Amino acid sequence: VAWPLLALRAPGRRWLAAGAVAAVLLIVGGLVYLRDAKAHERVDVLLRHPLEPSRAVMWQAGWRLFLEHPLLGSGAGSYGILFERHRPERFWDAPRWAHNDFLNTLSDYGAVGFLLSFGVLAVAGWRTLAGLRRAAEPEGAARPPPDTPQSALRLGLTVGLLAFAAQLFVDFNLKIPALAQAAALMAGLVVTPARAAPRSASGRMAGAAWLVPALAAAIVILALPVWILPMSRAEALRWRAREALDRLAAHPPAAAELERTLQLARVDLARAVEIDPRNAAAWSDLADALVRQSRVAPARARELGREAEGAATRALADSSVVAEFWLHRGLALDLQGRWRDAWADFVRALELAPRRADIWYYYAYHLSLRDLESARAALATCLRLDPWNGQALAFQKQLGGSH
Image (cartoon, rainbow, N blue to C red; front, side, top):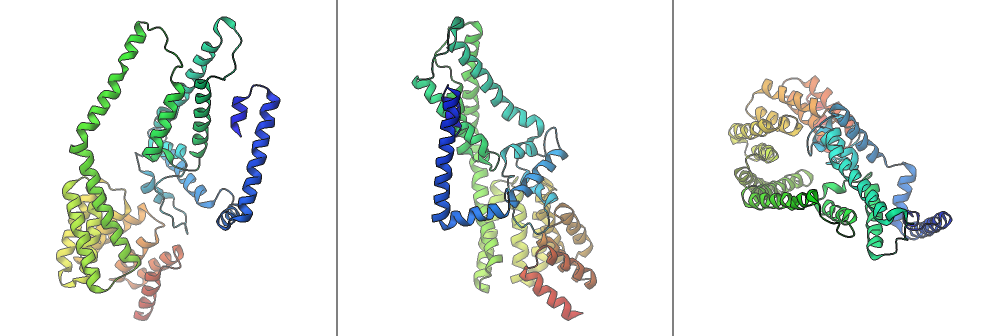
């Protein structure tokens, strides 16, 4: 729809062509809606819930995080963790990104990062347009039609970048390296001069600018075996173990298979923290695996609890704003009978993620060791947040019977 508005010179033809394209798209969309069941269902959901409720929730959280740290943001990649502060009740998604790249950039990097990211693009685009006008209108001559291969290519790339920029409002494309690199290449082709100008002294200095990317490439190549590959290997091991632990929670296997899976996950996580000791999530997941292992080996509960406490404490040394790190240390302290210390960790986890039903469930279990009434109240909160939590429903029956 935008292409005719940019490519055609006559105003009447522009709007007529754009309207014709829009009409064709509406007809095709209507046919797809009528003939494809999945498209029909998706459109019906959008009609019942304008803008899709989950997107609105994630965008509001991103804006609030930006307002908390408007200048420099809350830190790279922090959205998924700090989202817990603004999670509404009965919202069970676990977003890593805001599904709006502009808001995500504001949230993570603040106004400074936003201007460095998108402000540079705006300045480059403005300077390119100004340069094209000067090149196309020498000494007051009329501007020729954009019919050269170079101008056609530039127009196509520009329209593509505009479409990409529009989709940044509803997704996180710039967080995917392949898409970010493709967009950067397209932008580079758009702003590349059509023909070389005579090199002045300043131009010759600018010609040495190739040293900057060359130096950056050299740093990356040197860092690859020393830093990047070990970090990637450690994260791959952690991710494999995390997926195995999550599968155990969703589909509990037989005792022998459970013990074997926990042991393999523990080995993977121990190797991960050995390769990359700064991977705080791996330390926390190791604590989780040790706590779970204590349930199949209750005779070693205190020993495994001490190991889990050490792993969770190591995770907290790197970051104290992740609720899971406090939760896993609280569970480890409970295994050692240190109820009061564990209580403080559970409270801190709830301060960071006040609407996480799973944390309320574990807090209820912790309270049940000493205070049944408080445990029932915490469990009621858990079930208000997640009425279909099977573990919490079973535990509620158990507490009711003990009463």
